[in-house]
Image (cartoon, rainbow, N blue to C red; front, top):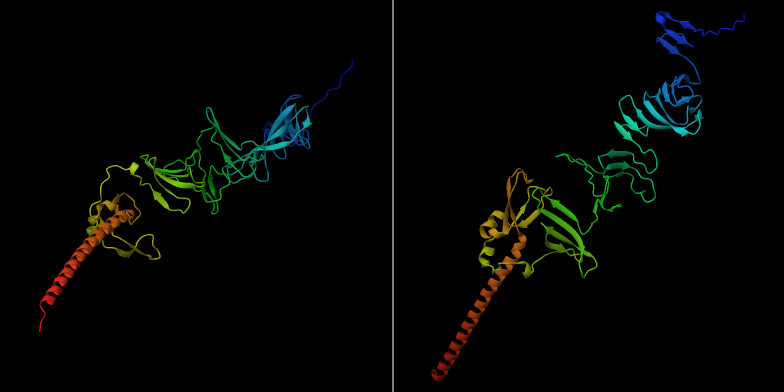
Amino acid sequence: MNYKPWFFLFLPIVGLAQNVGIGIIPTKAKLEVSGAVGNNVAIFGGDGAGISLQQNWPAIGFNQYYNGGNYNMAVGGGWIIYLDMNNGSICFDATTPTVSPNAPSGQVRRMSITQNGNVHLNTDWGNASLTAGSSGTGIAAAQFRGTQYNSLFYEPSSVGNTGRNTIINAGKAGGVVLLNDKPGGNLYIGGGTTKVGINSVNPTDILEVKQYNGRGLALINTGFNYWQLFVEKNLVEFAGDMYVYFGGNNLGNFYQGDGKYYSYSDRRVKTNIQDLNPALPGILALQPKQYQFKYGNPGGTQSIGLIAQEARAVFPEITGHVEGDDLGYGGMKDLYTMDYNALGPLTIKAIQEQQLRVEKLKAQVAALQQRIAQAEKLLGKTTTSNPTN
């Protein structure tokens, strides 16, 4: 009788409590394995794609194993998850696809998690809780998906975009990018020399606004009353004046030639036009003062003007009264204001009245002089006709 030889697999040792060791004396677990193919302690999956367990450093490969280099078990790409023994990070790396089994592949970092909980995407550096890097040229570093549109955050490197290091995209034409829309939240921009451009890629000033469709800068309150500033080219001048609007109405403009402000005073934009009441007595009643402002005047600069409450008693039309919770003046809830521009027409009116008085006095003086001359003439004739001895 022929006997075929029997082949037996002898385990190095079977420890107490049924601990099993393959190539190693088991001391840490029920099953301990040492050595298989290169750095791999075990490979599962047979001839197809499978999983590998690796020892130095501890890793799990998906359709990937290590044998002096990275290899894909089957056609296609793979993944490897391992512990970086240098810094304790868990790393997720992708292996580049191959066209044949057991072919060498490259390794690209896709994600890592540090021991302090920081997560890094497409990069293995950064000290933020979440750090994202672009995985290639022209590919977004971050994408925030909605139900229809996606917002992008990326650093382009294509020609023509070299001046823009980072782009935050609204996701669609007409979309909105909100930066800190919480009530009372502060938005800090710049580090001391930063220039901000709106519709301007390379601003030359701290804040540069390039108009679009004739629209400039608007300041709007909750009641939708708003101020606007536009720079426009008129029909006869090459350069543009700066126009001031309120509530959509043009109030005036700063002339580009000399920088002076011109308000509109055309008869066609006025109604209920009446002659001004006598102004001379009121002008004479005003009491110009010199003074120093308590607030915003660290150098103690001397000023000249009127006291609004005193002027209000004479010309209430040239004063105003502002009320508010915080006017910026020591907690005062109301302040009186002056319209110094209105003093011009009042002064003109007073000068005209004064001139009328002067003309009247001149007429009276001329009449008196004529009467005196006539009296002197009559007196001279009387003396001639009655000579004395």
